[in-house]
Every structure is written in C-alpha cells, then in structure tokens.
Amino acid sequence: MPKQSVEGQPRLDMAAAALLLAEAADRLARAEIIAAREVDGATWEQVGTALGMSRQSAHERFRMGPDGLHSRWFKKGAAQKSDGSSGPTTSGVAGRTARRRTAAS
Image (cartoon, rainbow, N blue to C red; front, side, top):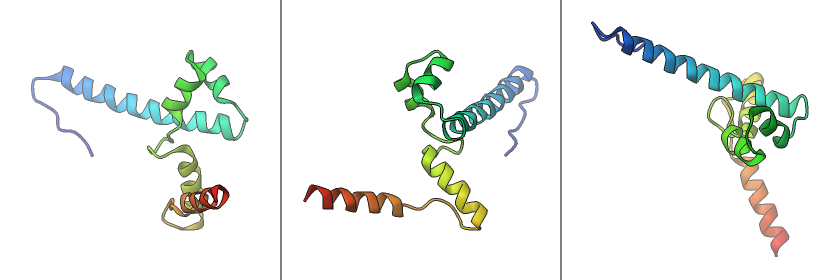
C-alpha cells in the first residue's frame, strides 16, 4: 500500500523510501540465508561467521523466513502453494507433540 506524501517534507518521503528499501533488503537476506542453509548446506555457525555474529545470534535473527514465518513453515508453505494449496498447516506440530507424549510414556 503506497504511503501518502507530506507536502513540504521531502525528507520524510526519503525516510519512508529508505524503510521500504530496508524491508526489501531484509526479506532478500532471509531468503538467501534459507537458500544457503537448504541448498548449500550452510550451518548456523557459517551464517554467523559470514555476518559477523555468533551462531546463536544468527539463528535467532534469521530463523524466520522472508514472510515472517519460521523457515520450515516458509519452505513447507512454498511447496504447498506450488501444489495449489493455501499454505502451512499445523499438522506437523501435532504429530511431533503426539510422538513426544508417546515416547515419554
């Protein structure tokens, strides 16, 4: 949704444009990190080293996909959308929870 310009305030227009650019850059970085991890087999340690941060910091910051979902939901959602379905579901979470309960019994 385009933001409205404030007459006589070109610096505010520039600030709004800069924020849009920063959001796009963040989405791109997240997509590339997911690709590096999935396609190239990069570890969180390698991601952290490349970005000048710890493995844990890299994981905490970039574990979410470019759409704001956890990277595993991003990947699952992308696969489902190519099948024509609407997006991620929680059935995998329910299955893991049931397995944990069974294993703990």
